[in-house]
Amino acid sequence: MTNLSANITQEDLNILTLSKSKMEYVGIIMKGLNFVGGSIEGIIKKIPAKQQAWLAKTINKVLMTVIKANLKTMSKGKANAAPLKKTYKAMVTASGIGFGFFGELGFAADLGIFTNLLMRSVLDIARSNGEDINAIETQLACLEVFALGGNTKDDDGLETSYYATRLALSAAVKEASAYIAANGTTKIVENVLISSNPIAKLVSSIASRYGVQVTEKFAAELVPVVGAVGGGTINLIFMNHFQNMATAHFAIRNLERKYGEDVIREKYNEIEIK
Image (cartoon, rainbow, N blue to C red; front, side, top):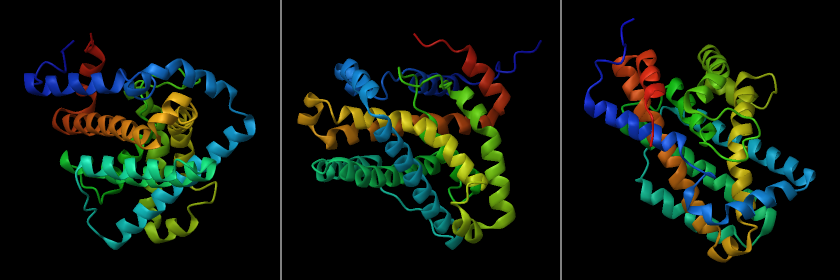
């Protein structure tokens, strides 16, 4: 049997290896909070069911709002101009500090700002890797980043390896893409909250995975030692984490365009990270 990945250059192999390292070895969402990992895990287990339901509803609403905003941007044909990564980090840090004193309401507001800025940063990273950020496919690929949390202790049975996550979302992504192509963005923005809408279904799938990370963020802000550091620092760590996920994701997609998805997936699975 021919080795499909034999013709990958060493430079591209290095890119793929670095990308896999970023994807597969994350710890509890961000290594910057490892020092309180045990505390976070314990707090998550103690979050009341009512509060967990509130978190899930908030996460879904925030993601839907971000998607509607980006669909409107697409329909108007605007270029998604965005500043550099450091600018986004500064903005989410300020948001975390500003809303850190207002409990659940502050957390919800901060999460909305954080998620919107994260989407803009992901779009910026996508463009830097040769993606057309006004294309439906790219917009949906950006949404996939929210599901790429890496390996954590609290995934509750969700398959988190990179290609397994993409495979799990593939059917929903294809349905959403076809729906947008067939109906146009204006109609979709008006009806996006209908539960049978393929966009709403995709958001639900992504929210369940993004929710793992958000729950850890919520729990981290309840830890006394983290609270002393502040919500701004937590936001900075989370933004850095998801920027790493996006950088790896779009680097891999770039390689897939160059060599073919099957070739890159085969080589990705062969690579061992030490």
